[in-house]
Amino acid sequence: MLGQCWILAVGIATSASMEEQPAPVQSASEPETASAPPPKAKSLGPLRMIWREAAQYPQQIVLAMIALVTTASAMVAIPARIKVIIDQAFGTGAQQAEIDHAFYYLLMIVIVLGLGTALRFYFVSWLGERVVADIRGKVHRNLLRLAPGFFEENSPKEISSRMTADTALIEQVVGTTVSVALRNAIMAVLGTTYLFWLAPGLASMLLIAIPLIIIPIVLFGRRLRNVSRTSQDRVADVGAMVTEVLGAMKIVQAFNQEDRESARFSGAVEETFTVAKRRILIRAVMTALIMFLVVGGITMVMWRGAVAVSTGEISGGTIAAFVFTGGLVAGAFGSLTEVYGDLLRGAGAASRLNELLNEQPDIAPPAKPTPLPVPPRGSLSFRNVTFRYPTRLETPALKDFSLEVEPGETVAIVGPSGAGKSTIFQMVERFYDPQSGTIRIDGIPLTSADPADIRQRIALVPQDGVLFSANARDNLRYGNWQASDEQIWEAARAANAEAFLRDLPQGLDTYLGESGTRLSGGQQQRIAIARAVLRNAPILLLDEATSALDAESERLVQEALEHLMQDRTTLVIAHRLATVRAADRIVVMEEGQIVEQGSHDTLSAAGGLYAHLAKLQFASEAA
Image (cartoon, rainbow, N blue to C red; front, side):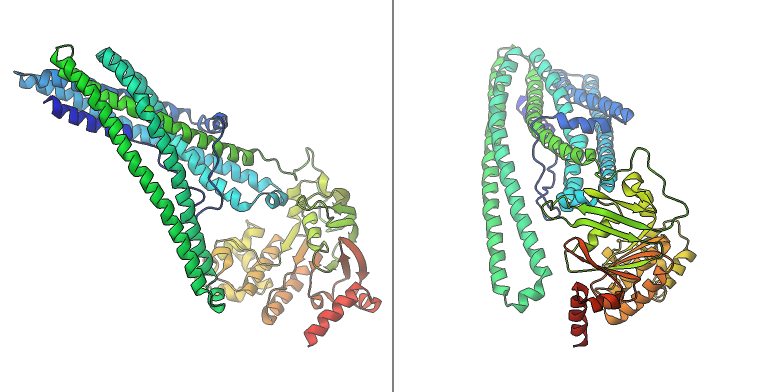
């Protein structure tokens, strides 16, 4: 009978010690993400950020802690009840009532354990999801405040990884790791106390044995974790290779590189298998070690306990309860060593997210912004502006640049690539501030005004009609979110977009695909123009709006642009000089400076850079 109880106790204790081990977080090196997993922090200090977020929900924390203490206490109470059952219910001549009474209490403990576990799981999981949602929201709101220069120096893919892989790690820490750590700490303290109460001599032996069991397991576990991460990296390489080759299949086949790509893929797969074999070997050795140390340790304790039972020092129920509790205590200590590493990784993730959360925008409204004049006039002024991009400080993008644009004037900006044309647009929208000089809208320096007020007076039509993964209505009203359907259709009509929009399967409710991929380039551009029409801003910026279109699409877009430009101050960037002949003024730029300005006829006759560009372009078009 004692042997059967020992087997039962070992099985339950082993399963209990393995319960709720933190689930592995998907490595950020897998194909879904773009960067390596967050490094371990040197301390747990960065976890204070997580605690600040969780502390906003004290009710859920209190309920989770009550459930946590209840389940840990119930788990330790089970071996105490098993001792009573073995000593009383299994004793010779035990009455039915005594047996029933003994098991009733055990069932009550199990019910409490089950309910407490469910409540603890619910509340800690709720906290994990809630904290992650709050952190993601705060980080995203702060990212939206940052100037474009920040995203030149910090890869959006790496930021995206922080928003996914790092927050997943934090979710694990809040929703699992902390709960497991606290639960096992309580179980370790209560269990150790109970062991010494049951059998001080055996408890001393067990406490000496536990470190001897845990240390090699932890060392093997670290080795296994490192090899597993390497294995994940190799699998990620295979996935990336498949994506790259399948995405470029026409090029692969056009250059007859099928055999080479097949050999390259086979090499990557074999390397993955080699790493996997090493992982399997380490796991096999680790499994054998665990079985030998754990079962061997329990056997030694049982051996000593059997001798004590035979001499009458302790009862059979005591030794069964001792083995059960010993398994719980050993599992608790082993889990604590594991969760500490997870807490350090969680601290590393929290540190990286905290950097994004605390990043301050370079472009921010002044303490007391100067209001822009009402009604708006639409004048622009650049005076002695010099600007260098943060990532290219050695080369000025604009150098002592001065330009006055009158309200309602159409100014075309032309010049070779790198002349500084697009930089002008970014300066007008105050995505950057110049190192010297001033820029004004309606006489107000941009640095004195609220950036939101500045951008409210500007409508942009970019070179590529940037659309979002949404329906047509939401893409159109991005320029004016309060626009009615009637206003949307009016803007679509003005942008020559009404016809194809009405032909869409669900009209304005039609989903346009990721980045508008269900539309042609010309259709995307006309939606971008309609969006600018809805903006109804006094200043219009056209950045190569027709450069990538076929002749028919260009004609439709050009007609829409002419309608849009009426009664607005317009800056036009164009490489195709035929599209800017009718501009009020053409500004020719080179190396960040104005080298010529005037009308098309005047500049063509001057024989300068514009005449040279026009001659080359019109000659190639005629050919």
